[in-house]
Length: 237
Image (cartoon, rainbow, N blue to C red; front, top):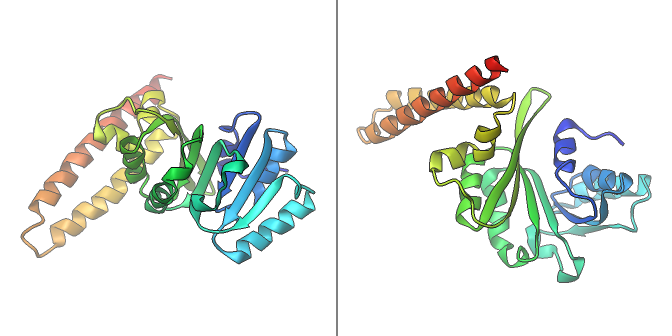
C-alpha cells in the first residue's frame, strides 16, 4: 500500500509498537498502512461523519485489518477510552483552530499520551502557540509538498517548549533550526498572504487600522529577514 507524501511523512513519525488514534480518519489509509507495515500494534480510527467512516470500513475490509482497527463514530478525543491504551494521536487535514479545540475538549484524555502528530490546513502559527502555552513541546517539524500544496507537520510531546520568542514559535522553531529545503517556499507564501492583508488594510477607510498596519509591517520585515537567511543557507549548501 502506497501513501501520499503527506501521509507518508506522518507515518514516518510514528515509532514501532505504538497504539494510534487517527482522529478524522477519512478513508483510514494511515492506520491500515501502519498495520500492514507492522509499525503499530493496533489503532482506533474515528470520524465525526458517517460517510467517511463507511469509506474507512471499505478500506479496512479490503486489507483484512478489521481485527486490529476499531472504527468509531464520534467527535474528537472524547470518544477514546482508557482501555484503548492509545499513546499516539494523529489529527490531520483540519484547521489549526479546530485542532486546538479538539485538544482542549479532550485535555483529560491526553494525560497518558506520549505524542501528538498534527497536520493543520491553516493557522499553523496559532496552533503552535496553543501547544506551547498548554504544556506541549514542539519536538519535530517538517514540510511536505504534495500536488502543489505545502503542508506543515508537527510532532509534539507533553513538556515545556524551550523557545520563548512568540514569532519563532508561530513560524516553527524546529523548522528555523533545521532549515529544510522547502522552508523558503513556505516563507514566500507567508509573505505573499501578509502582503495581501497589508494592501487591504491600506485600502480600509477606518482610522483605527494604523496599529494593525504597523504590526503587519513588522511581521513582513521579520519574515523577509528569515527568508534572506534561509535562502543564503540553501545557496551555501
